[in-house]
Length: 294
Picture (cartoon, rainbow, N blue to C red):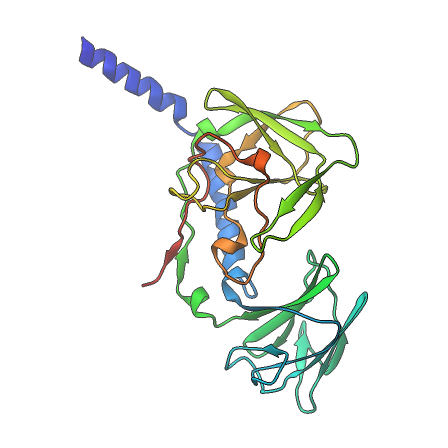
């Protein structure tokens, strides 16, 4: 009798956590897209350098006398000079050196610096762009023949589990609300927070602040699996379309994913604010470390 009851209990538990086939299909399609994006040209696996620049002239190339010294094999000894002024960054190449932007050659160019619309320029296997962060300008370099990229096998994920496909509500904050976010370099910035998501997990109500204010919900969080199967600093979660305030929507923790810092040393990822550190396991989404050749 005990064996029968135990078997029934196990069957009920399995049915409780079994994932709906359509949900599995949706999550796996999303995971395939983020895997493809990670592997793409100029993706996180290709990064080869991150160079903060000073105001004025910044020489760059593979020679040791440059202000920005590139790894060997990624260009001439002196490729050119980047001139940084308030609100303007200009790249001027050395005589005989040429780069392309979307296939069109140039020798001098005013660089776009919007981190959401990266202005990549290319020279052989090397690509680069400039981003602006809190008034500072940074040159990010990519090597599309990177050994990190060629040796990467795959991300690693938990199986899709409907126990982590939870009912949630988006609760707005008053306009103008900000939360302090610290990155891996211990730099702090006040980021807009339009509200928080609330849901039940582990038998308790959980809350996670949203960071940024666009058409979706961006969440930085950590749970008790951090450093014990998932990336220790934390993970990201993004809801593509902002739900109606105070109305129930489905929050899919199966889509939790690792930040760029899990794949490259040349990134500066934000860390979860204290209120987004959950005291519960989220055994869903992306694991760590990824699979690498060798």
